[in-house]
Structures are given as structure tokens and as C-alpha cells.
Amino acid sequence: GQNIDQPTEMTATEGAIVQINCTYQTSGFNGLFWYQQHAGEAPTFLSYNVLDGLEEKGRFSSFLSRSKGYSYLLLKELQMKDSASYLCAVRGGGADGLTFGKGTHLIIQP
Amino acid sequence: NAGVTQTPKFRILKIGQSMTLQCTQDMNHNYMYWYRQDPGMGLKLIYYSVGAGITDKGEVPNGYNVSRSTTEDFPLRLELAAPSQTSVYFCASSYSLRGGRNNQPQHFGDGTRLSIL
Image 1 (cartoon, rainbow over the protein chains, first blue to last red):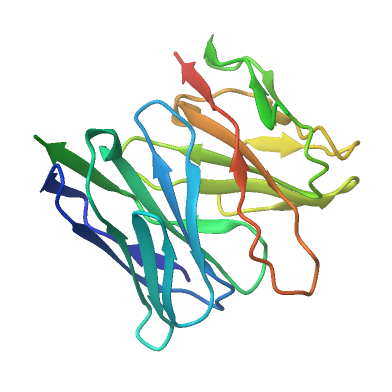
Image 2 (cartoon, rainbow over the protein chains, first blue to last red; image 1 turned 45 degrees about the vertical axis):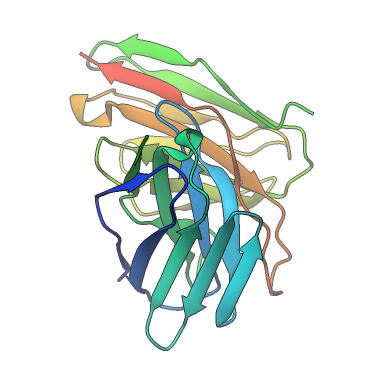
């Protein structure tokens, strides 16, 4: 079976740093994706990890540890527009579809 | 480039009615997917297709049907609408090399908000 866990909600301050964690148990692993989804909109791709380590993309970084079934998304220099849900998704060993966590709703306060 | 286009954006159906949710992509992607997203829940895979003429069930296929006659189009059919099918439906596409390492992200349409009353 597939199981992906991430916190339901987090609050952070504008200009600060926040780390959103994701743990997963899946049958097979072919990569982990992070998506951003603003309310009422489609998910948009942020990052992809398939090997252990850190991937950096501007203000966003994502880390993966396959042995621990663990990933995190790090957002730096937070801006008000970063208020959104952040979805952790795993590509399993079979079909190419993704298994999504329930998402973390991030609230940015001034 | 339009990307992934879904129509309609909103729809209200009565129980027992049928309808087709349209999805088309202009990126020449071979893989296409249908997900549903319920409040407070993650996206769930309904059906997917790895190319024209090939479709397969995802995690929650009951009550739905799909077809893939062209690379561009992947319509989702609800035959007998039920209240449990009230949801937001997202179509997505990606380019995937079968059997190879695939790091291509899925691109999502804007969604169809469907209410069954």
C-alpha cells in the first residue's frame, strides 16, 4: 500500500524560513515530487528528488532520504504569496501516476 | 502554449445524470491522468493512459470511464452521477520514457468543479 504523511497546517512569518516534512511508505519508489497549490487553482510543480540529498531551486529546496522514507521542502525568505498548500507526492513502482499526501496548508503572517 | 485545458470549469448535475469531462493537452505528452480532489484529502488517481488506445485503472476508478483515441484528448465519463462523485477533477499530462528513469513532472489543468445534487 501507499501512505504519505505531512502536517495539516503550518504558520510562518514573512521573511523567515519554514520546513515542511513528508514521510512516505510506498510499494516501490521512482521519485518524490513537491507541488504548490493556491486555493481554487491547479497544483504547480516545484521540485523533484529521486536520489538522496538536497536539490536547490532559488528560494525553494527539497531533500530526500530514501532509507528513512523522508523528504522535506524548505522555503526561504518567505513572501505573502507563498501562502498555499504544499503537496508531497510519490511516484511508485508500478503505474506512472502519483500518490499524493493530503497537503500542508502554509499560512504566512506579516 | 495552452498546456492542459479542461472543460467545463463548473457543473451541477442531478443524481443519475451522465456527463463527460473534457481534457486536452497540446504538449505532445504521451501520459495523461485523471485525479479527483476532495476537501482535506490528497489527490486520488482515477484513471491514466500511457498513450493513444491504452488506458488503465488508478486507485478510485469505480463509477468512471475513460477513452484515449488521440494523443491530445483524454475525456472522463460519469455514467450515473452519485453524490459521492461531488469533487474537483484534475486532468494532468506528462512525457514519460517507458522503462527509463522519469523525472518529468505532471502538468495539471485548472480543474472541473462538479456538484451532484
